[in-house]
Amino acid sequence: MNVAFIGLGAIGLPMARQIQQAGHGLIGVELSEANRTLALTHGIESSADWQAASDADVVVVMVATPAQLDALVSQCGPLKPGQHWVVMSTVGPASVREQAARLREKGVQVVDAPVTGGVARAQTGSLLIFAAGPAAAVAHVEPVLRSMGEVRNAGLEIGDGQAIKVVNQHLCSVHLVAAAEALSLARSLGLDPGRVLDLVQQGAGGSWMLSDRGPRMLEGTDTQVTSMVDIFVKDSGLVADAAQGCGAAVPLLDTAHARFCQAAESGLGKRDDSRVIETWAP
Image (cartoon, rainbow, N blue to C red):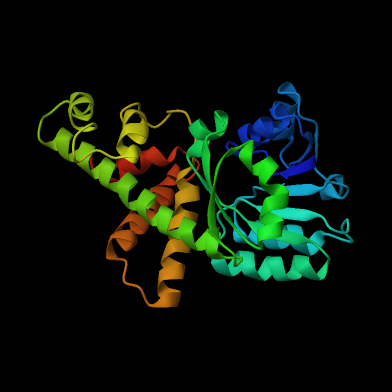
């Protein structure tokens, strides 16, 4: 299939590479010149103009925020009849429903398919994909989705995938902050946090976030950035908004969101999300 991939950032680029390696034709759309240059080193041609996606059979969208998705849809002119858009960004149920309605008016089919697994699983094509939308539309884009990971049926309604991702991001947010607090506690108890991490991560108190982010928490502020603090400010904020909209109480999420906001306000927004540990006193 001819695929356009919009958003060649830290997770988008390895996702796009998996699509290309599966044999699909691929063109990227990316505003950042640095990201376009990096993509080219991996054999992916890209443009800063969304019109590069106009002739694609499938358009995969991996922008960062609901506002960016809105801007993308707003600037689109006439689109290829029968084109399928796959929204894989974490933008929340309300955003994807609104933009899907606008795209359908342009004759485009939409699949709501957010992902989880981070950069590490994007690089190996083993993301977990929550795909929702009309069965025929999901089936049409499934060959592209399968190149990036395991496809799970999230429902027939646009927004169902994003709703599941909201639950997923609630857990990610809370587990990440809990891991930071636990390693900070170890340090305060006079223990070597690295040694504690080795001992507890495979026990009953372990979590994927502890094992994945824990080592980077111990590396310091300049550790490699795989997902920014600002992304978790956005994602935990989407969870809070969704919970408020349905009247659900999420006190643990509220605490985690406050920690991410505190980290961003202290100048760590563009740092790796593991740096939320710096909101605890050294």
